[in-house]
Length: 247
Image 1: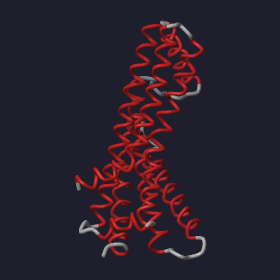
Image 2 (image 1 turned 180 degrees about the vertical axis):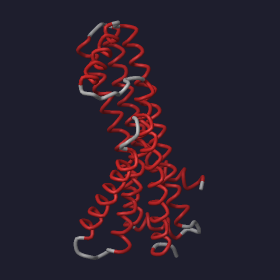
Image 3 (image 1 turned 90 degrees about the horizontal axis):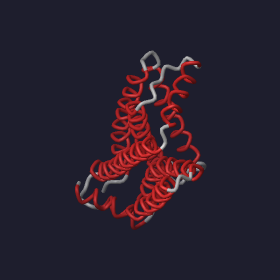
Image 4 (image 1 turned 90 degrees about the vertical axis):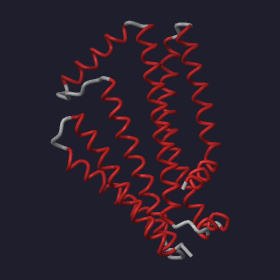
């Protein structure tokens, strides 16, 4: 399993380095603008870092889906399934590598965001007043949501778990297109519809199970449900691969 994880990481490390390099440039721009008291550029830098965080994590998952598709549809990738490793181990290597990449990236961007907010609070005391204004605005909308570090940590956790579940669901839909619908007309569209239906079902399950809970509990249980759906999708995908791809 360790070698499979390393193999998957080697196929994607270049993209991760590019994301890290762009992030470093945006963070440097933020620090320089903060030092020079350029409030306009502070906002632009923070916006860029926010889009980088969300977009980078999403792209890590998309690249893993594309790599999975390539492994099943090219001769070089297909050789992987002719090794002594079972499809459960091969898929497990992909899931673990992608899960680690998503969660490490999420932790990194969350820590970077916390650092930048701390620097802003230390540099501009007005941000405390802004937080009070946002809290009052949410109260007027009857949304009892505490804007604190715990909430943002749970939002981040929920996003990461849900995105991982989405990636593994895409694996399942892609395996259906490759194994069961290969050569069939509109197989790509059918697998896309399966992916959308399963993603909607997971979101609906989260909503039904957590709609009566308070914010903190809702976010925690949404993450738990997403991880549970990930496990189910992993087993279903690996079983299908084992039946149709293993030799």
